[in-house]
Amino acid sequence: MSVLLIAGSPTQHSRSAGLLHVVGSKLAAQGIATDHLVVRDLDAQALLHAQFQHPEVVDAAARVERAQVLVIATPVYKAAYSGALKIWLDLLPQTALKGKTVLPLATGGSPHHMLALDYALRPVLQSLGAKHILPGIYATDVQVQLQADGSADITPELQQRVDDAIHLLLTETLRPAAFPAADLHFPPVHFSQVRCSV
Image (cartoon, rainbow, N blue to C red; front, side, top):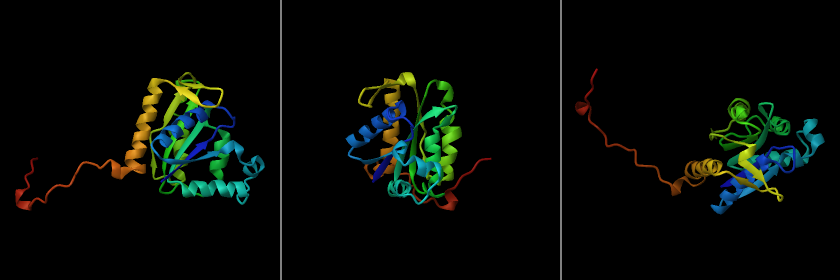
């Protein structure tokens, strides 16, 4: 089972990338293999001129195809996800996320932009065929403190939301066999035993 961590920030050191690093570290601690894709490192001319056959664009799409889970991180600008991420998503095949689970992450300057995940990013992920889009994690600047090495310290409240998302990924997608659901099978009931009230 593979997870592709996608950093959609146009800057090298960003809070969204720091939050993505936290999620990646927690997945690695669970023994989950991860791959990293940094959108800003892709060839800018290829992205801007929609060169679908450019080797870097083709390779990025292939990495998406191989992954079963995507964790996509973006800063929020003007109530929407980053332009760099938008340009790259536009170059993916229409069914690029078919059958995949996606965990969206976003950071912004204030709580007022938290709905950007639902109203801006989620519809695009759905249009690309994502099977399951987990509840997104939105964090404000005060909840994510960047360190000099690009890692991040996050507040306990945000830590809990990240842990809940990781647990959801593990139980529903990455290791469902390790977390068996309750037995919901009922014995057959003969029609003569059925009682209804109106």
